Length: 116
Image 1 (cartoon, helix red, strand yellow):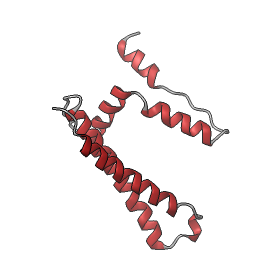
Image 2 (spheres, helix red, strand yellow):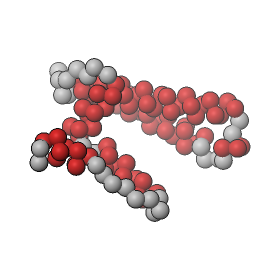
Image 3 (cartoon, one colour):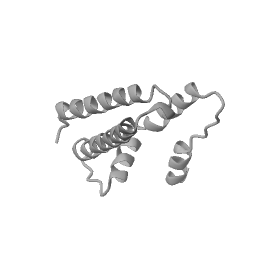
Image 4 (cartoon, one colour):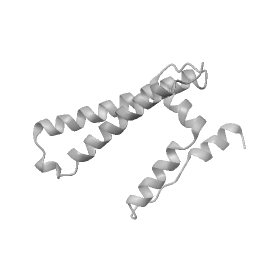
């Protein structure tokens, strides 16, 4: 079954909106946050995670014709098919923090699983 672009756009819009609100809330120091702002941050993180997982479930089922048995499996299916989640995160972390070292195990694990 083909992927419906309106479903993707809706989820992505929800994620972007939540990230934008989260960025506004986290722009001030934690000690200055009011309790309702702290709960708002928690809620927005939940919304983002649920939207991302929902997106992975939808893509797994519709685009890849696989029915994941769990949210974790849906994320694995999409991540392994697209192969960009880890590398984008690594690039982001390296650009933001020059005092860290990262070892990307993704390709090593894939090669090991294939017996190469």
